[in-house]
Length: 273
Image 1: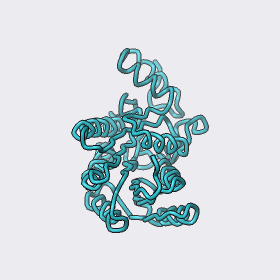
Image 2: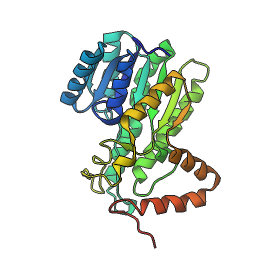
Image 3: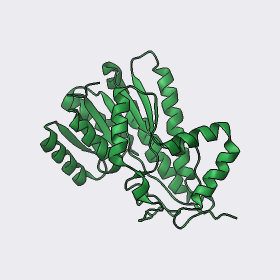
């Protein structure tokens, strides 16, 4: 698939996987509409990409928990470029806290960003994507297939995203629209530093060994190649694929292995007995 002059909307585009996707699409000649809350950073990203790759990029301040912001993001794309070819639902927030100690506002926040943000953006972009027979992408997680301890709200929001995308794909089966769920493994990005603690504050530090993880740039390459091939699902790591299959075939064993894995993270929330 040739991305030259395609119009790509990316949420959560000021850092991490979203920013890396913006760069990869720009490198392939696509024009960009980038949404994020951090508007100054977003403007810097768009200016850099325009200068570096000679494409057109538009920054739109967007809080995906607000439907009106998501609607405006799509409207700005149509007003500027008169079409939308690809929507990357990437905006997301994580958490790290045991459910028993968790303020429920944290779980609601996660659902608002990770699930409702995807729903709002997709709802307003879909009429345009139907015209171009384009792509709707959800950047999900292995946590959308296998619930992870200390991440109840994150897992729930990604399960919800996966179910929404699967149902949407089936509804659109004969429409020509491509729907893909992309599931990175643990990725080096700001998401764990910004992950919410039990009271809703940001952790400010990562609980994992970032150097051993896939880079955001690698994830972006997988996503763009997956869209070019119009793939259905991308599970990007061997560990992720193993987790998905173990959870289907041997769920009780998966419980034990996942439990043991998370007892080894820094400042572990769960302890081996």
